Image (tube, rainbow, N blue to C red; front, side, top):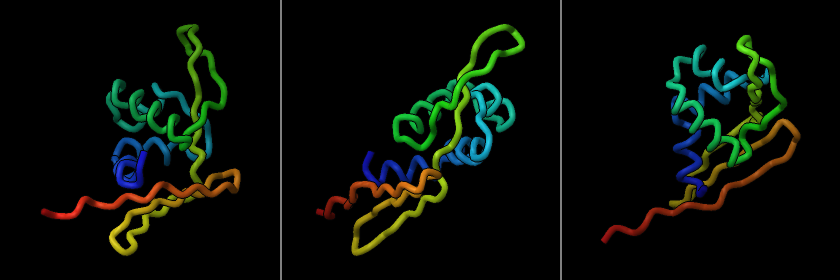
Length: 112
């Protein structure tokens, strides 16, 4: 994702709730959806997107009361910053591991 798409993902209400709720303790998608009032389908979509971008990780699994296994996810983000500099948008992620990742620059197409 470019910086613009990542910034939209970060400020998305559901993504922000998921990253915040799963900050300190691994959580299942079902738990996040129930506690955060997120539709289940959207919860799974956001979790998959956040996983693909490396902002969440799967930290194991747990047995549900119904006897099924469910994956547990935890946020990897310690800090995220959005920069607007000279017409370009960039994001900086600081992860719990200490790693820092910058997004690709994004620049709006010139007006015609």
